[in-house]
Amino acid sequence: MSELLSTQQIDQFKTRLAALEHPRELVVDLLLAVQENHGWVPDRGVELVAGMLGLTPLEVEEIATFYDKIYRRPVGRYPIHICDSVCCWSRGGEAIAAHLQQVLGIGMGETTADGLFTLLPTCCLGGCGRAPAIMVGRRFYGPLQTADVDRILAELRREATS
Amino acid sequence: MKRTPQLLFKNRRPGETVWLRDYEQTGGYQGLKKALRELQPEQLRALVKDSGLRGRGGAGFPTGVKWSFFPADQPGPKYLICNCDEMEPGTYKDGELLQADPHQLIEGMIIAAYALQTESGYIFIRYAYREQFDHLRRALAEATAAGYLGRNILGSGFSFELHVHGSAGRYILGEETALLNGLEGKRPNPRSKPPFPAVRGLFGRPTTVNNVETLANIQHIVNGGAAWFKGLALTAKGAGTKLYGLSGHLERTECFELPVGIGLRELIADYGGGVWRGRNFKSCLPGGASTPFLSAAELDVQLDYQTLEAVGSRFGTGCVTVFDDRTCMVAVTLNLTRFFARESCGWCTPCRDGLPQVAWLLEKIETGQGTMDDLQLLKSQQRNISGTSFCALADGAMGPVDGLLRLFEQELIDHIQKGACPFERNQASGLRSQV
Ligand SMILES: Cc1cc2nc3c(=O)[nH]c(=O)nc-3n(C[C@H](O)[C@H](O)[C@H](O)COP(=O)(O)O)c2cc1C
Ligand code: SF4
Ligand code: FES
Image (cartoon, rainbow over all chains, first blue to last red):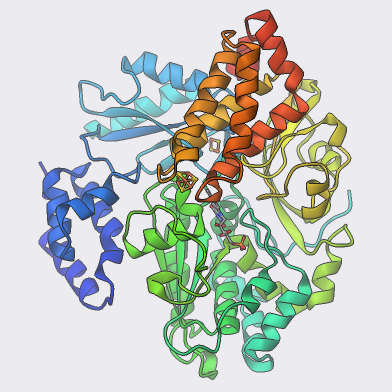
């Protein structure tokens, strides 16, 4: 399991924090940095961030759990956010969601046994002109047909083993 | 098709981003120079007021009027914030602008900061706009190196520092007071208004929040003047151009810069390439997920604030989502209501408890389980929720429900009487669209 924040990152954040009148404005930055290293934010991550900001873990937790792109539970290496908002829905988003569930053999909120993929519904990705769309990690894909989904999954599997 | 002068999309090329040198070559940062050299802050605020520019983030408040409430002369820290949360379904114009031309926003913000005398600013940007976030960071570094940002900008004595804050999801962050809490690192529920952000905003200090597109217009107003800007619109009361992001059942779902006041029919036919698959227009959301539907009877409306209000809807974000004649409007409204219910921040009862109930009623009707009593309940819920929530999210959620009840009540009744959705499910949901 990777470390939550590298020593270098901790030093950089400390420098930034020291220059701020209101250090807690970096709470989302810190949580996202932990997530980038670790894949998700474990309890230890909440405690680490709280300690750096002089907050209680509970104060950090109520922020962490508000945002849907901060994962407080383990997710696969590639979290797949499937847009289910109206423009994607109007152009076949449900078929994309059904196809992903079928080929990966998992439901929404679940992770594949190999730890690679998690399926998560999401609201509009801001790519409504390229609907239907998904976001894998922070990469946007759209407009999609089911064949594109197969190609993307194959690419990601290749990327994961290389 | 008359060609519209391009201000905001002037530099846009498919797949490219304009950086500082190219931006300057097409007149970039001239507006800033002019503003700093020739105009006093109060003159700038008056200019923006005269231009008739209205906020492009959805509420449409006149920007100059908002700025006139701002205590620009009050000493101490004050903040200018750009709202690039852009999470209302159908809306993707700010993302397109920042993809193409990040300096445009930065220049607009520096001029706005000078007009409001704020020395510090933030650009708040949503999680999904990772590329735009990176573009902004690079453009900010370029602008700082060129002396457009930082201390004593271009020798004017005015200083402004600008930061980018990347968010982590949730539509409610776009509401300006929730955004302020988010920026402060607090749980981002909305705050009560008053006090308005101009009085007590970020860190308790005077703050103005404006949309990306609003701010990007400022240098064009400085360069071209208020009368010219007003004249760009096709309606008597309108002003400027608008970014129209098209989506839904159109042949071409792209984003165009066109005059405020363009006709809906023309937008759909000439720019959207018409309704897809040779089908007919049934309805649209004229300005994002929170704007009441229009029907084919309103196709001749001009897209502007007053004109859309006159037909019971709103200009909103100017991003139009079209539905063809095989679409079930109950299903569309159910999808929209589920979005709002899921994105509710949970702070107040009408929204937290009311929206799931509306979704449940719509689901019941859509699946053929609904009764005429459910229809009455739906109507009373719509009345109960409208105007009673703590922030505007739940009001916005009632926009499409209001449109459904006003324009498509017969469709609700058909579902109830038939005991099933009268539309072919595959076609209504678009499921067959991929074959
Ligand atoms: C639920 C909700 C979401 C909003 N989302 C956005 C948004 O993503 N972008 C935006 O500019 N304004 C959004 N607004 C409007 C802002 O509260 C605010 O009015 C706007 O940023 C002001 O800028 P403008 O006057 O330049 O339009 C939202 C409002 C509500 C109630
Ligand atoms: S209407 Fe109430 S519950 Fe809904 S988002 Fe606003 S404050 Fe939160
Ligand atoms: S509705 Fe899917 S990206 Fe906007």
